[in-house]
Amino acid sequence: MPTTYNNPVYPYRRPPELDRDDIRHCPVVIVGAGPTGLAMAIDLAQQGIESVVLDDNNTVSVGSRAICFAKRTLEILDRLGCAQPMVDKGVTWQHGRVFFQEREVYDFNLLPEEGHRMPAFINLQQYYFEEYLVDRANQLDGLIDLRWKHKVTEVDAQAERSEVMVSTEDGDYRLSCDYLLVADGANSKIRDMLGLESRGQVFQDRFLIADVLMKADFPTERWFWFDPPFHPNQSVLLHRQPDNVWRIDFQLGWDADPEEEKKEENIRPRVQAMLGEDVEFELEWASVYTFRCRKMDSYIHHRVFFMGDAAHQVSPFGARGANGALQSTENLAWKLARVLKGQAPEALLATYDDERQHGAAENILNSTRATDFITPKSRVSRLFRDSVLELAEDYPFARSLVNSGRLSMPCRYDGSPLNGHEAEGLPLELRPGSPAKDAPIGLAGERAWLLNQLGERFTLLLDGRVDSAAAETLRRDLAPLLDGQPDLDLLVVGPAPHALTELPRSRQLEDVENLVGERYGLTAGTGYLIRPDQHVSARWSRVDAASVGEALDCALGAHLAPSTVQGGTHATA
Image 1 (cartoon, rainbow, N blue to C red):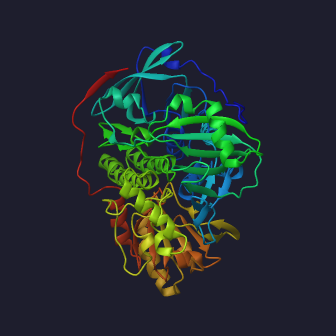
Image 2: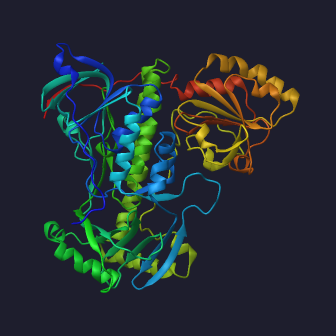
Image 3: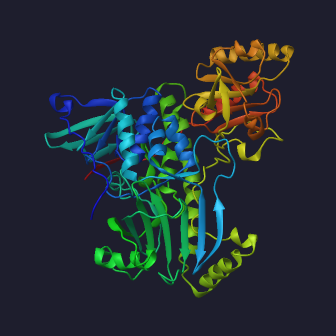
């Protein structure tokens, strides 16, 4: 099959541990240099934490694999310094169309409002995504020790530390670490070594992915067909990728033979029937997959933390796999950094499991519902599905029931033990636990974006448009808090009196299009405490230092009881 991409080969380097007699100890070891492991290493590095990243391969993924990256994921990657090449290379889209048999039944817009730095979605082959992450990790050399062709063959997980045996072409060596982070994929070898399980549902259906190289004038949209004439009684999905590559997903049915379906002579007639006999194309990559929705009961085993597909899997409908994985890394990184720096109790790390179990359950629920709608398994389910599609063409209420994959949305950590005060009368979509919203701003006379001012530290976002007397009262109240909390920044929405802009680590922004005030429901004195992962921790109609201090303690887990995972395991591959 032809290809438009040459996979880079990264160099193996002989490990220095082979030349020492003792076992080197590291703060963090990460297993897996895919998107999850690399994003985690970059996030930690930007917060001053070193890591060793081990991968048994020496290149990026083969085939396009994950291609849809949602707005929240791009915002996370923007904070990590690698979103711009993705947006520059990727295909930006926000419209989708749904077809039933021969006609379009409805369309949708994922980001109808203006004033956001990142688009609703981009399509980009996973190999580009991984390459950009490797490039960014290499820029942080000294904080990230990225080791290719280093295979973990043993894990000793204990309550106070973990130890791994690593195999290389020059010999084996051991590393010990405070925290072992596992991102070795859906068929995690580390999970198996430790005797842990990921449990859930296997869906009895098969799908063919065909990446087709062609020049076509189809619009840059997501097209989904139910029961089309060119592939009757099944579903088909079409997406555009960079380099004139188009992703086509064909539902095949459970009885399909995967090896036969992957053969080009069997793929080509399906694609030709869809595109028309006169359309010329080349097949770049193909795969047949069966998927499952499953997760581990706990992502934490002693000081071993599971992330990404190693911790949880969903079906591809809705683009929740890679997008959910990046939300997991941003959740864990700031907590682990503060525990390692002695700024938070180790109990804070347990909230990674609390919050991301919630996120995974949400993703699995939406993914399962989409799968059941796309692949009905009974006559009654099929009748319901087809009736909804018939009605959707003319009736708006039915369109909300159509489910061709509810596309990935950012997770809100409702009920999190880290959530602080909630003020009445402020926008529901920015309640504690919610990711912050972006908006255009002015900063030091230049145009900028709100989200670029948030992240990696705690930030108090304060509407400082108060009179001089109120500003002086706030200054006296907040100054001791800011002096005593070096991890807290102050971002003031102005124009604000000098009393506020003279506070420690204070910056003033201008609400150039009034979208910050509109989206955050700001009035004079309103405040939001934003976590290092850009999620709202607490908010107030009128800010005072005592309340902010209490919320900050809550967000850092000061109120949490110490907890450990029982048991110990020694395992060998």
